[in-house]
Structures are given as C-alpha cells and as structure tokens.
Length: 511
Image 1 (cartoon, rainbow, N blue to C red):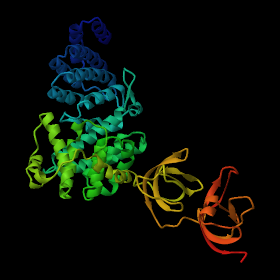
Image 2: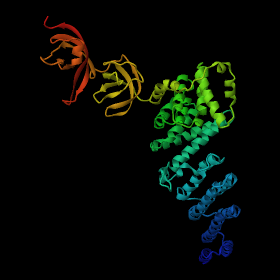
Image 3: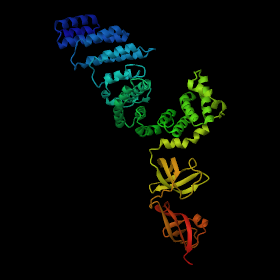
Image 4: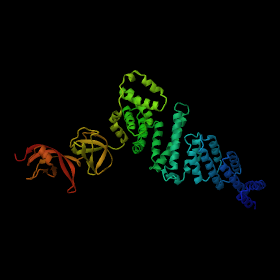
C-alpha cells in the first residue's frame, strides 16, 4: 500500500520523494481517502518547515493545495496541526515593528478555509494570537465574527497564569473587552458620519452577549465597565448608573472611573464637577489629568468660577509645555479671553476639590438605600457619634464631614458602607430629617420618676434615666416627667431595654 511507503519517506525527511509518490497515487485515484490523507500529511510537513523558515509564500501555496483536497469535515487532525503552524507564523509577525498587517490578513484568509476542531486548544490559540492586535488590525471584528465566541473552552474563562507565576484576566474576558473597545472606537470615529446608525446597531447586537458574560461570570471586574460605556454611547442614561456604580466602587481610586462617571451627568453640572474633582484627587501622574482638567475648566467657565478655571488652565499649559505638546485651539481661546486676563489664579484647587468630596461619595453610593438612624451619644471633641438604626444595626462614625453640630436624639438619613468593623461604619451620605423612627426604636413616655436613695439614676417604669439627664434637668424623685426614650442594649445584662434621651418635668406626684 502506497500510504505506508509515503509515510516512511516523510518520516525519513525525503519530502520531495514523498510528495511525488503521494501525488502520483492521488492522480490515479483522486477520490480515495487514504490517498488524500497521504498527501495531506506530506503537505503539512512542507508547511511546518516553511513556518520555521518564515517563508510565507511557499507556505501559502501548500495550505491552498491542502484546502483543494476537499477533505471530509471529520478530517480535523491535519487541519489542527496546520493551525499550530499558523499560530507560530502569527507570533513571529507580531514581534516585528511595524507589524505586517497584510500578512496577517493573508493568514486570516487561509484559516477561514480550514476545518478546525471547535472548541479546541489550537482554535483558542488562534484567537489569542489575533486578539493581541485587536486595536490596530482592521479585520479584527470580522475575525471575531468568524471565530465565534461560542467556541471558547471552559478553561478560557479562567484566569491565565504567566510563566513568571503572575495571573492575568481570562482569554474570554480579554476578548469581550477587545470587542467592546473596537465597537466603541468605531462609534466615536463615525460620530458625525453616515455609518453612525450602523455602528450603534452593532453595539446593540453585542450588548446581550456582554450581559450574558456578566451574568455568568459576576467575578469579572471589567465587563460591567464596558457595558456602562456601551449604554452611554447608546444614550441609555436610565440604566447606565445601575450598571456602572458597582464597578466604580471597586475602582474608586482610579481617576478614569470618575472621568467616565462625569460623562453620565452632562445635564447636571454640579454632579459633573463633583466627579471631575474626585478624579483630580486620585493619585495619578499629572500628564494623565489633562483631559479631566479641560473638562472641569470648561464647566467652571460657564459657572463664572474664573479663578478656579484659570488655575486648571495654568496646570494644563504647564504640563503641555513641559512635554513640548501643542496647545489645543480651545485652550488658546481661553487664555486670550478677557475673563482669563483679569482672573486671579490660585496656588492649587485642592481645597475646591474637597468641597465636592461628599457629593462625589454620595453619587458613588446613590444606589445604596438611605436608613433612618437616631443619635444615641455624641463626643463633640472627637466628632464621633453613636447611633441606632434597629436592634440589628448599631455603631458609631465620624460626622464632621457632613454636619457641624449633632445632638442626642437627632434623626439622620444615612448611607453606610459595609457591615461595620467593631461597630465602626464609614458614612457615605448623611443629612438631618424630621422623619420619625418606628416605636421599636424610639418612643414617647410619661410617668413618675423613681430614684432610689443613694443612687444618681432613676427609672420611669422600665425606662432608664441616666445621671447626666437627672443633673441637667434637676430632676427629683417622685416627679412626673415626660420625654423620649431610645431602645438601648445593656451590655452587663446582655439584653435590650429603654433609655431616656430627653425629659421635661411636668409636676411632682407628691404635690
């Protein structure tokens, strides 16, 4: 049988003899599957040797000859083997500067005609290779459509470990991010072009796939960010915040998160300013702040905050001059304007940024529910208060960022982050309110005050009246008093009770 003869020639490195023999047998019987397999593996050896020498022209001819054999769909082993050689050539091409995009186009045209195992190691390797040039390769989105994200393997959704032991995000996540970026870039590039509706439709078509990824992999950090950007590009302002805020909280120290958040509030200048100010409070090299400062300066000018605007513009000019970057036309217009010439610059806008810190935090956590808290104790010196929301949630926090003065019994609407550490909470937002808590937290009382001889505290029925209240209001045993009581936990007894937080002397029961 000629198959074994050709195989022996091939294994001994006599590729030309093997090819001639296989070709001869194929011409005798072109429909014989063994004859096709015989020459297919010889062609693979040629492809492999040409891949090693980076002789793409010869390799291309051999691959085309392999395709012309019209092997059955289940003859995938030889195609998978060829695929690894394509991957090798692709990576060799990526190492060159500049990258030969025409060659990559040719590789793509070849692999489109090969019958790979899907999903498979080699099929994922092809995606990984082409994904590395997603930002510069014009045919990237066409490639993705052909490759089809349904062909990711289960391991492609896991973090990838590098040779140095470090981990990077999964191949699948990198793919979805790359497509998101390209689609968003295409919308930006055609913002004023005739293809804008087409580009937006592509975003709409991709969005359900991205949403499915987010649903199946809530551990992925970045897909929600790109979903928010897509919703923003589509003008879906109603849903963008609910999607973006959880991601923004996880990356709140990154200036670009606040920059994007500012874009959501184009119609709300104060919120936009708050986001841009928070961005400028992040630790980032000054060169990265140019666009943020420009956005902030533009709004400050419209609000006639000329000193603050001039301070931002001067920072922009300093960075551009230090890096020998050109001055944009809009900046040139600003510095020649009369308001700019008359405005007094500040040493820094840091104090101005801090004025918006609380508002920025409130924006970041606005999807957190507000809770009604009652002030139980105040340490004016340390600016710390103890509060109770219900029997399951009590604790303390600093209040001076939001309020100058607080008194026991004050009702506050608060947003609190976390579940508390040793009952300490971080306040996200806080404001006073006249809203009344439930009777299980706070109630009015009226009755006779009982103070045992030799003691400095008393009770109205089961309501504890502390010594400081008795001293402050000059209360006496037997007086009829009224006031408000707050539910309170007795640590010594390990049980809940009631504690008066204010009192009024009505009359003495002994009169």
